[in-house]
Amino acid sequence: MRARPSPPATPLRRQLITLVVVAVVPMLLFAFVMVALFGRQERRSTEQGLRDGTRALTLAIDRELESSLRGLEALSTSLHLDTGDFPSFYEQLQRAVPTQPRWRAVFLADAAGHVRLVTSEPLAGAPASSIADRDYFKELVSTRKLVFSELILDGGETPIIAMVVPVIRGGELRYALGAALDLNALSRFMVAHSLPDAWTATVLDKNGTVLARSREPELWFGRPGSPALPASGPRIAFTAADDGGVPSYLAHGRAAFADWTVAVSVPRKTVDEPLYRSLGVAIGGGLLLLAGGALLALALGRRVARPIQGLVRAAEALGRGEAITPTSSSIAELTRLGAAIATAGRERERVEEALRISEAQLRAIFTSTLDAIVVADDDGRYVDCNPAAEELFGVPRAQLLGRGVRDFAPADMDCDAAWREFLRKGTARGTFCLVRPDGGERHVEFSATADVMPGRHV
Image 1 (cartoon, rainbow, N blue to C red):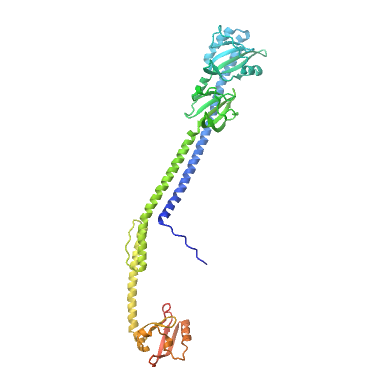
Image 2 (image 1 turned 90 degrees about the horizontal axis):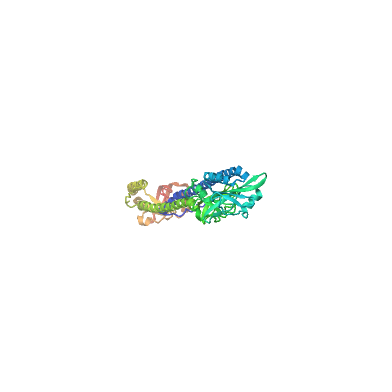
């Protein structure tokens, strides 16, 4: 089986930087996710707050309108209207109007639309006027139910809207009794409704025209509202749209009495800016954390690399058998490794010294023994011998080394076969006729052992 190639080595600093990235990036991702979830929760909370605020404001406006309606209905039952006693009814209205803070004035028109009296003007010298051509009066005549007029500028300055109820006697429409509602008072009412500072409440009629607004109402009377608002249904709806050219989140619903749209909005910037700011802080902090971690990894890598390089040099010196230079480090593991290498160096010196002594002893025994000893390689050629072997073979050491068994064997002896058999068995013992170079023969007893060391046979 082929061994898998080892992956390429990478520097310690790069490994440390990778460790920093692996440690920091998940934290950053977690922070981003938490910020996103927080932002989503904030938007949901804002949406719910807008819905609740719109619902409460719609109910409050309905209660205000209902109160005005009940006042007009009570006045429409006056006996003075049955008898046509307008002066008495005028006095009754003068006492009733101050009790209704949303009323600027009350007027009475007959079935033909001719205005018979207005509480804001003297009864005697009131100029003749008619509302017969007004759409709200035509609707009242047709439906004989409560109607609301479109936006009216009283004298060109004060915005009002008329709430008109029919006065019916004997099944016939006798009069139209109306109250001019002060829209400035309605705007002040919305301001007093405890909305947050950044929120804006708006009331629009069924045509989408602004009737009241909690912020800068004088600039908005009669202007069209957001295109998203006139479509409000009976349920509170939520949308993201422009409100006066400002991208906003809006909740809107419908006031049942007047079929008006009530909307509460907040600029998107107010809601989203904290989220974007948090994201910016998270991103900036993450980048700073990554940069700081990378710089710290570089510094730590440099601090660790120096003693490691010293240990590498010490290990190389140990391999070459040279003296080892001690390496110190503030890192405990590297200090222990340096100490281990130093100990290994001392142990190597001790072993080498013992080996030198052992070799010297063996060499002394080898050279001083009276028995002839030769060492042969795998081809049967002598690579070492002692002085007794020089005397036995009759040649000096220099001439004996490099020659083999076959050079000193009788001519009829199959030395190659005998050598192979010896290598196969590992040992041999017996007698041998040794033929010296001078022609003399020596009959010797021998004992041979194969592979006393790899490739060396004695």
